Image (cartoon, rainbow, N blue to C red; front, side, top):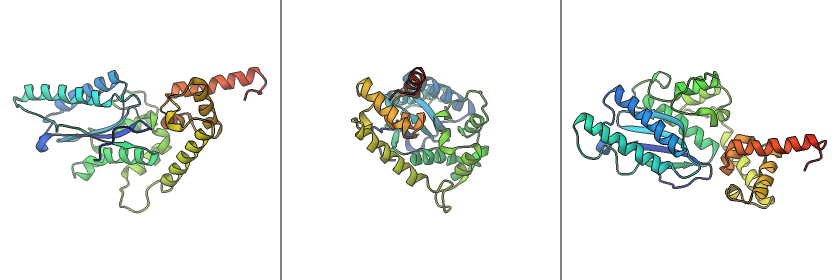
Length: 267
């Protein structure tokens, strides 16, 4: 997996492997401990766990990290778990490879493919069907589509709109890269066109898309409102600019309230 240090979208595909194909989980208790530690480390660092899968000798994740805190969170997670695992099992030495792998996900298509790939791990390894494997976030996605508020270890909410529905998510998840046309065959072209249009629009408004987050608030707001007026959703604006959806929503709502007060004459 190619190591890329930053991505403008904040999404990364991450993999941590046991050194020398070392098993990193021996029991279900090991897996529960890792998941709880993963949740705590990511929460404290402000990193969102988008998808996860635990295999015997590696962990596969999709993470959302706007503040470049992922390395610290992963290092703490892997070192803490390794110490506990070694103490419990009586082994010594490194449990994980020296560096975890990460690859930037720069388009909706890449995010969707990474999530599909993470959930497909057990099936591709011949261990279990995707939908029957207990140690992945696949079931958490299905609960999210059903508006089940049961908290899991992932937060699928930031990517649910990419798939559109539970049926589309299942169809896409169970597809394979070499099985012919992908479930959403026009997504790649549409995403590239959408992102290119957002780039062009932002530049036309005076701020390149990748620096909108650091721009003065007045300039930032102009770009956000311009993107929203052009039909981009709050979540899309969040992904393209790195600005949190709560901030984007607040700016859009403030303009709407001002328009109501002035009879719709706010520009």
